[in-house]
Picture 1 (cartoon, rainbow, N blue to C red):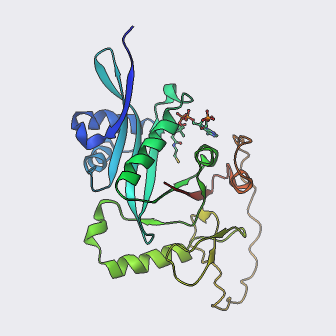
Picture 2: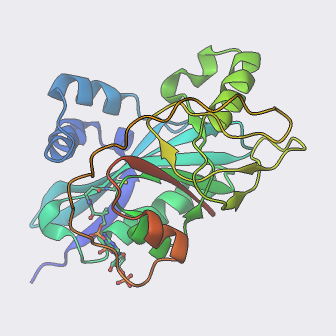
Picture 3: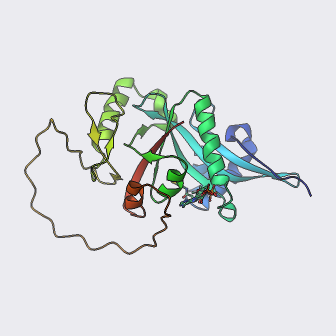
Length: 245
Ligand SMILES: CC(C)(COP(=O)(O)OP(=O)(O)OC[C@H]1O[C@@H](n2cnc3c(N)ncnc32)[C@H](O)[C@@H]1OP(=O)(O)O)[C@@H](O)C(=O)NCCC(=O)NCCS
């Protein structure tokens, strides 16, 4: 029997696979194919970089996974990973772990020391790979070099302040200023973190309670840490996580 080989490589080293990769990602995150192709064509060594998992089988190459790495702003030597994906029929075989470890190796080879990500419902998967709860970071994708540093600094501060504070989990302040910021899950709203140095505004009149969210199946495994377990499976929240690489 012919040996099956799986590799993780930058997509821009195999440009002929861009369309196949775009179609694969669109099976899960539906988007216009042209827009998807354009965003994948940006991949380059200097980031953002799309890594693809390619399976070579019976003399043919097929894309079976993807992960995109970008530079994170406002944190020294930090990058951000998104669109982590393994073809549906091949999940649960260790490929997700492999692409994450290869992405970490690739990023560390470029001098990055921390990997950030956010997720709606895969906290347990990332927790299993060593990711911990984190503050949010800002990413500017392919346009980062076009934006003046002062503006990036301002955006970075706003991004951290606008992260919603729900729990008392303490995170390091990524901007390395004197403050410590207590943040948890980032909401889609633009609530501001309570900051000890700023007096709180008077409380607004109470709105009527929101109707309960529809019940969703809990997929949490017993392996995640307590905070991750508590936040798991809430469809309204994005959880930020990070790992030293
Ligand atoms: C998330 C995803 C990439 C995982 O890929 P995968 O190939 O199924 O994962 P693996 O088989 O490599 O799993 C690695 C480990 O994580 C665990 N794991 C995988 N998915 C998990 C989950 N949803 N919850 C908890 N643990 C999980 C596995 O049990 C395995 O543990 P082990 O190392 O002890 O055996 C894949 O499910 C996927 O593509 N999902 C759709 C896209 C998506 O949601 N991406 C994440 C966006 S934030």
